[in-house]
Image 1 (cartoon, rainbow, N blue to C red):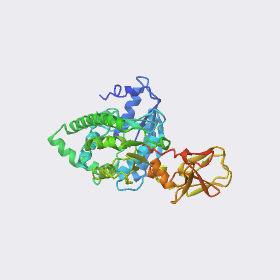
Image 2 (cartoon, rainbow, N blue to C red):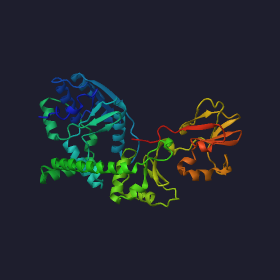
Image 3 (cartoon, helix red, strand yellow):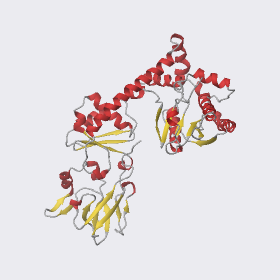
Image 4 (tube, helix red, strand yellow):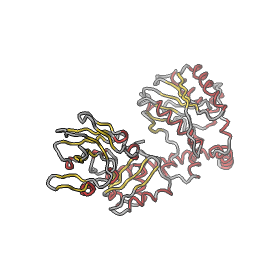
Length: 431
């Protein structure tokens, strides 16, 4: 007997439950169980999403199959067509496209329910072990995790595949079989068809034990996450130039930790922002950490960059990695000026009279500073300890070809006006 009542009780107040339906055994059983449960007790509204990748001819018939099933059960179906980006792994590309579509389809606080079962969990753990994955990955598939504006829940992770098969046959359900599931060139299929049958001959409880091992590893990772939060709370000291809106950490706090503890804290911090580097690429952190104080080191990661400046590391992503348009004329300074990928600027105070334009540092600029005369802009930035990555995109205001103000630095303004820079809105690049 497969009982979802207790498993799903934490989400009974969700605005809706969305079922990810591939048409295969697992998702078909999950949908049937949920519809049956909805006839016994009050549940959030059910709707179904089918993702069509278009990767093989056989898949063209699956949307119609899913539609018939949903019509029979009386639930709404939405079919979403996605394009899989070319890459080294077709499996990963299809997965990325699928979950991106799910994330976009979820409304606030909705729950996406997927049909992965116990053997899927065991295969995931074994697959990641063979890849040399760290502890964070060895927790395998979590029972729940945030997704888009909602949450992803896997209510069947504790259920064996043979129990799903027994249920499907008892209920007279039909499902589609993906021909690619028998293609041994895919690593997961090789594990499923070649490795697991051999393991089960010697250790009949292998899948159950591996799934339980994944739970223990996930619990251990949870404890490490708690430690990471404590360490990050110490490192998240107030940063200068808070108008940058960028996440940063105090390097000196991290340096006092042991090397494994540094990596643990950074893995937790980076996991919210980028795909994590494998063990071979953590030398990038060591170079960043150990660089000389006058250096300009950076660590390039998949979805952004870590820059070090004046004893802090800063996370840059999205527009912050793009070169701003060289200059823009400002015909009406009473109206904010959009700077494309570099946010926008506005003026306050007594507006300067003359032809105005916004430009960026090219080198050799000077600015007249009250009581100090003409000063080199580079030296002024050094005195303020302005991070190097900001200097090339900090808007400069020219009036009749003379530099008269630097954005967000009121001490670097010639007259009774201030240049305000609203930084790019996606600066943090949170995932």
